[in-house]
Image 1 (cartoon, rainbow, N blue to C red):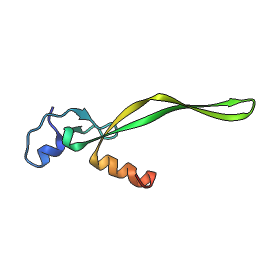
Image 2 (spheres, helix red, strand yellow):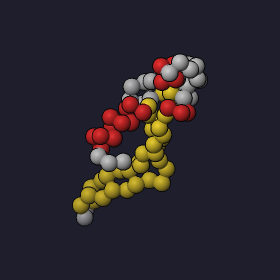
Image 3 (cartoon, rainbow, N blue to C red):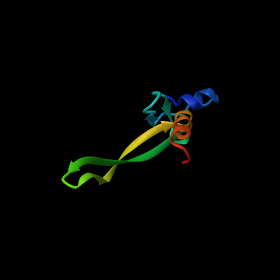
Length: 76
């Protein structure tokens, strides 16, 4: 599979990931990898508690989807 963004620019570069939002194949130059925290919220006798685990979950995005999500989440 080839990188979609590179194909638009006239290059043939192998893709290394698929955007989790739109499904676009992207190469190393056109992807963004984020590490998402993994946490759990639960009720206790003292109220709500949140536990964040040490391992994170990777998320691969293309630049257009990253830009679209960044405008929703505020400043990055």
